[in-house]
Amino acid sequence: MDRGKVKEALALVGLTPIDADIYLYVSANPNCRAGRIIAELDLNRSKVYDSLNKLSKLGLASCVLTNYVKRYASTGPEMLRRNYESKSEAMGETISYLSSLGIQEAGGLRLRMVEGEEGYKSVKDEFLSQLKKGDEILIMGAPVTVFERLEYYLLGFHKRRRSMGVDMRAIYNYEVKKFGQIREKWSRTQVRYLHKGASAWVEIYGDNVMMPIFSDRIVTIALSDHAIASSFRDYFGILWKNSR
Image (tube, rainbow, N blue to C red; front, top):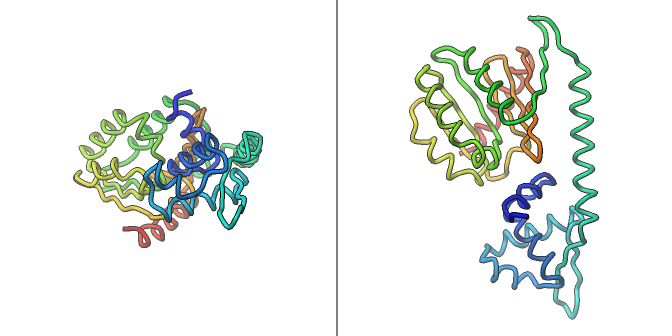
């Protein structure tokens, strides 16, 4: 399996690219010292220790103290499977709950769930088409996966957005900064970053909200409701003030 695909899969259990590299390393090199990881992966010392602590808390890595020296190893694929299943179960329950809300007539909540890249694009294009000059799109927490898969489409989308006179503010995690820096140069576009990544990927278009999930399957939850959109917009405002 391609290493990039492996790291994308590990992101489903909350591992950043650095976490994934360290997890794969301790899996291939059991009982290794942190210093060896730092040297061979050429990573910042504090980031390595932060990731090792995170992996230990998730139950994905173990630490054994031998002669006053800490050595690290993977706890094996079974614990990884349990982590994935617990997150999948929680997401399944969330989707079931949202589905139980139903779809109401205009003026109430409208909820949809679409699958695949084309489903994501169709909802995004539909919501853009409902905006007018001077309106604003708000985006927070978009993962690196979406840029790697759909950058060609996204560049075209934003070209159309700017030609319509629609503004955008985006809050990205630092892992996507190379893509954010491209957008920083655009007109009608403001970009900020969070040191600690946003826990959810949300896009807001007027009274419409998208919550895409990119993993082994792509699911986009689309909500149309003024109150819900206003709530997400308020949350965005808080993050915007705390980003840079």
